[in-house]
Length: 355
Image 1 (tube, helix red, strand yellow):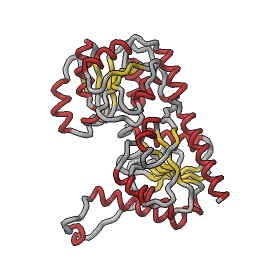
Image 2 (tube, helix red, strand yellow):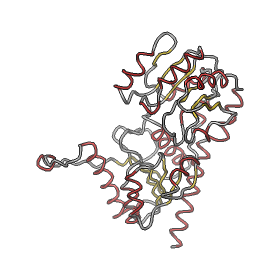
Image 3 (cartoon, one colour):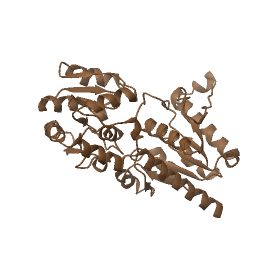
């Protein structure tokens, strides 16, 4: 099939990934291409040119100083993102049917949904977040909404008041995340922002008497300097924003992975990465993590409770690592994810042909 894969334009689709959405999009693009599909990836500047796909560059615009002088003018970042998606959707409305058999929207922007009825190509949208107001607005005005998929049952339930969706769990290419022996310090990985709360991981591991390594991009420098840096020391250090290979090596040696969301995680890819490495997870029971982390893969703790999380760290470290890996193989496989999307693409194209 000829597939147009729409990514988020905010961050490039390349390592080290800015977050789970970028990692999942990269994995999906590679998996589709390996299955022989013709994939065009609409993604931000700096995306991975080694992917076996055609990269579709973002359209840019320079509006006049007079226009930007308007007191209600949006910021340059908002305008750039709006223009890129507007140009893409107008192009798909004009010639999409000649170029593609299906469009898979992985972005968080409202325009692909709002303009889907103008595109004569079946579209599938993956919901990667809890409900967003701009997308709900687009749905309210969309007479023929596209097909939707959620990345977990929790995410599907959270959107059900606005739209129904199938569930396709995110997946990892397990070849990239081999299991390891463990025995090392605990690891926390992810975007360093307040809603991911790595400071609670430091507190919990300190209570448990377990050393901790933090890894991930600092996307909120003020939060890092205020809440995280003062807690670092001999038993807790920051390793930086690691490549996938570096993070995999770290997780293979970790005794436990600590995940500390202070929001409802739609899925929790960092937990899947840890379990694929054979490393059990200690996490707050929030959002999709309650589905992703089973008793075979980790231990859930009361949200926001560092003392309860410390107990979970100790309990999780006792789990059988072979069992943790087996759980990941049965639930977190990129092959299963990509095959499910291909089946949905085929269903959509059959329905389009019959219409």
